[in-house]
Length: 93
Image 1 (cartoon, one colour):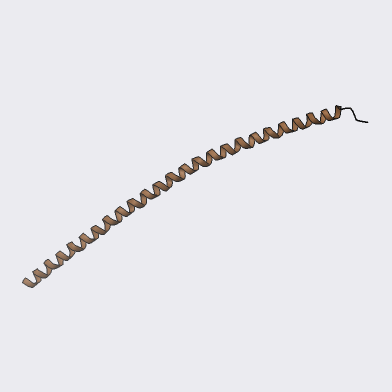
Image 2: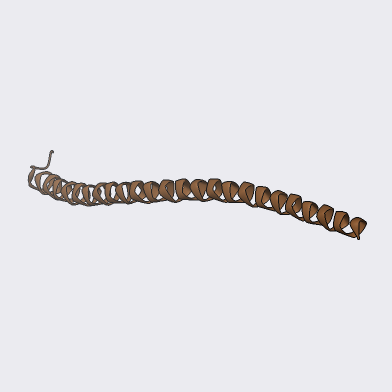
């Protein structure tokens, strides 16, 4: 009977040790998951910033495109005016 009680006490102690090891491993995993979550949040934030910058660049490019359209219209007007001036010049003999 004494051997059986001792064996049960040893088994109980082993179970406590295993439980402690499992708890320690779970704590490590929890810390690691927190680190991964933090990293993912940083990536998500960076992507949000990049999206904002892309929007700004797109707006700037649209402004440049619009300005180019205006310039093309002005060049057409200047070209028409020059053509008219040339048409009105007297022909040289």
